[in-house]
Image (cartoon, rainbow, N blue to C red; front, side, top):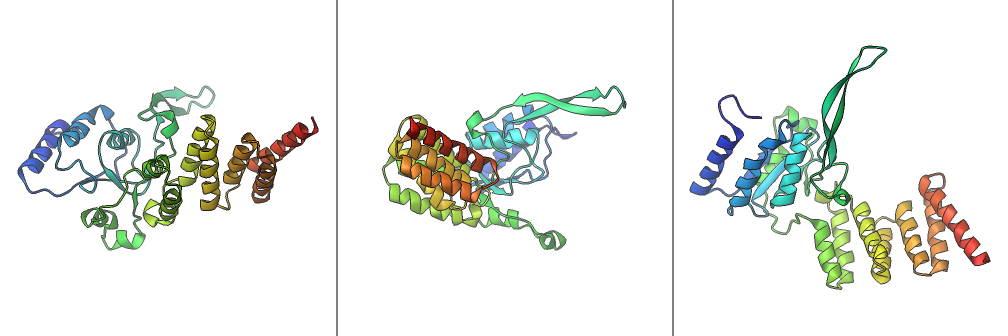
Length: 291
């Protein structure tokens, strides 16, 4: 919201004038405690950064997010993600990337208790990019001891940042290597990312699995099999990874392998949904063989 004595537009105009006129190396925008407000106020922040060639670069622009980044502020970080080169630092946001917001008051007829029901669907990203939260590319946690001693490791990570190789979009890097046919590099880089603590909030398993299904739906069987097999190597204890790899082999007419991998999924998830799905697929395969 606007301050009582100064609008957001006026404030950020001064911010970007200061950046232009001074030797500014980095801009850190901290929205860890921002629970939202009016997302129509986001425009001067985003457009000012887009116009600032000095700041709108990887390693120059940092947005600190956390477990209280919510509502209209989720819209703001979505716009940072869509239109700027911001590096997100800290913890995941508290809001789904696309979400229901705003609310109507409803009085329950029997108790008279008032409840507030969200009704407005806010979608800043395509549905396939939706997720439970916006994950930071540079994960930094704050302990109670940090809080008690008035230390801020998240802000320190921004100010002291010097890693020129950090990736704003790790999956885009893997896709680039894959499209270039550098399969060995894809696996090497993926292993590094999955084991790198700064990417610990990135849901690589789901993202890689989705990439495999994109290829499978396009009938690119060789690429799909590689991606699904990569996921089983990265996440060998994931029943879903093995189930997806089995499905790809089944669709590629590699039935014997599909049976092995479906059984692996059942072994890892004997009483769950994935295990049930694998058992159903094995029954389907047996019925196909019988015919």
